[in-house]
Each structure stands twice: as C-alpha cells, then as structure tokens.
Length: 215
Image 1 (cartoon, rainbow, N blue to C red):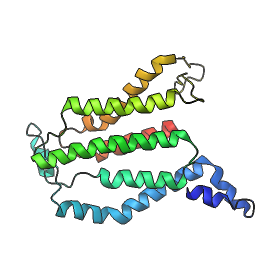
Image 2 (cartoon, rainbow, N blue to C red; image 1 turned 60 degrees about the horizontal axis):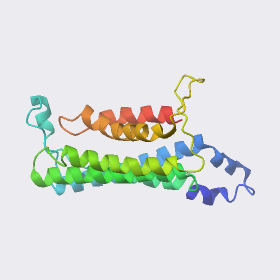
Image 3 (cartoon, helix red, strand yellow; image 1 turned 45 degrees about the horizontal axis):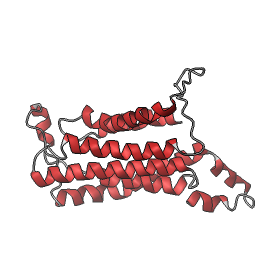
C-alpha cells in the first residue's frame, strides 16, 4: 500500500520510479520484515517466556534435544505478522497472487497456531491429530488452487527450472499437483526438525531457497 502512495509522486520526483521494480521492493520488504523482528523480537520472546509458552520435546528424541525443553515456541506469532506487514507495505495490491499467498500464510499459520496451542495446553508434543492437520491443509490448499485455476489469466503450463523448453500443460491435473506442492511444502520444515519443533534453521534454508526460485 505504501508503494502505491509513494509512486503517486513519481512524475514530480523521477527517482521514485525505482519503486516500480520488483527487485527494489523485494529488498525493502525483506528489510522491513527484518526490522520488525529486531524491534519486537526481544519483547515477543520475553512475553512468550512469561506466559510459559514453552516447547514440549518428544520423549523418543536424543538426549541432546532435551535441553531445548521450555524454549519459547509459537515464533510464528512474530514471523508471520512481520511477513504480512512487509508484503502489504511494498507489494502491488492489485495483484491477485499477492492475496492468494497472504491467504495461504494466514490460513496455514492458523493451523500452526492451533497445533502449538494444543501442545501447550496438553503439556506434550502432540497437538492436532494427523488427520485433522492434513484435512485442514488440503482444504486451504484446495480453496487457493481453485481460485488460481479459475482466474482469467491462469496458465496450466508447468515451468521447469533450468529447462527453458520444457513446459508441459497439466490442464485440470494442475489442481491435485498444486495441492500436493502446497501441503508438502507446508510440512517440509516441520518434518525436517520434528524432534523438538524448533525449526528456525531449516526455515531459513527453505525461505532462502524459495526466494531464489521465486525471483
């Protein structure tokens, strides 16, 4: 939204044309999200610690993971708002893909919140059941993919990275394929570090990789 406001003055100040470039606004969005985390990160950690929102470690995990018990969890309460805030500031508001991504972040973030909340209430590492979690994830992915598929500018061709001339048309098959990708991606980090649920290291790797491919 701020991007549109600033760009209104590009005819008077030519250097404001730089805001037209996605690269520049991506940098600004990244810095904005980082700044939000820096400003509110310490406060959020102390608040979660004071509320005794600590991670429950699985009993079958290695002894080295036991020391992480009680580490403040629900970091998504800081990470997701910083992402959404930065995106709303610097993204193109007329772009439907932005709103679809925001829906996925908000919906799947809600699933994560419910999962962590149940873990804290039950004082164990089990939150939502596998059936409940996957059902909610598939439902959210289905809504997203159908909105995308029936959008007027949608193209069902699949672009394969590094293969310029490989672009198969999946037609309606794009729907189950996209659902699989969304649900699979949402579980990738969680399953990678599922012993203690403190997945910031694989999260950094996943975000960095996605940034490269998206760009």
